[in-house]
Image (cartoon, rainbow, N blue to C red):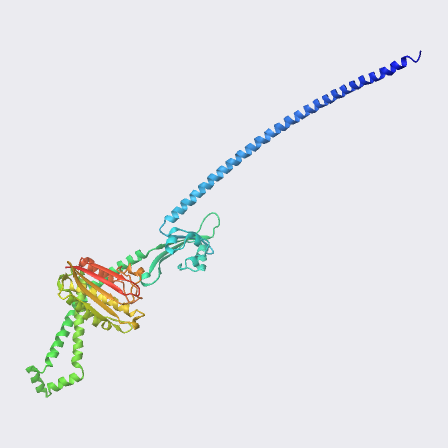
Length: 465
């Protein structure tokens, strides 16, 4: 009987074990659940803290971005203002009629305005950074002199600096302003002004005063010289008359002193005395014409016009030119071949004979000087062609030579006062300007010129009939 309950206990033990396992499992699950709850709560708290920190960081980033955007905006505005200021300053500098050149103390170009571009033909992009003396070699200051002026810090002016000679001469005023400011800046601004017109005007005014004084002097000299010259010419005529063999008084006087009047005249002829007397007469006549011109010059505002045979007036002027015009190098006006193209009938023009002669003498003198300066003169015959014709109610005279011609740069100023292509001492630059004034203002005519280098020159005078 003791063996019966044993199977039951054996059967009950697995059942108890299974229930315990379930309890243990539930307990474990509960523990895990609690643990997960605790962990979740911890994670949630950490997530909240992270979100809070992230929010703060976001706010900080947004604040930084805002300040950055404001700084960028201020920078862009400042840059725009600086750009506008630079454009405004450049507009001011480029609008000025002066050449404005900025340089460093070593002579490197930092600014080159529009007037500098126009005056030199060098664009700003090519000039910037280059040496001033290489880009603008006309600057009459050495690098050492420029550095000295910049180092001293005082501005320096140079007035009426001449560039070129003769017809191409130009004058400039140059002022150098060393840069000054709070920061140490080594450099200068060079201002260059073209004062050619001003200098020519000043010269014209001085020349006008000289001419005014000369006119008064000429009038006085002409009156003073006219009397002794008249005596010379009159006594010369008397000497010639008293040497003539046909006059009774001459023969009687010769017989009284015991000489033969014929032998005396023969001796004088052998010794060229009549020729010398003739030279004296010609010189006296030229002096008389000079005195007449001086008087005409002294009362140029009272030129008297009358009807003149223009062809005879031209021929008389040609004869006068042959006697008076002679250039260096032994070229005389009489050596120039003159071709005359005249109409068959005389042309009468209401004009001042002395004024027209002055114009023609100036033209003939210029032609002669052009031939004297012509390098090809040995290979050709100097020739002047004179053409006179009537066109409706106008007299037209053309003076054409086969000389060296005139450069295009010079022909635009050919009638300007004091404009000359000759070297110093060979011309005043007034001949053609005075001639232009006489033709256009005194005679209501026209004066034109046409020329090409190497193809001669042609002047045209048009006068109303």
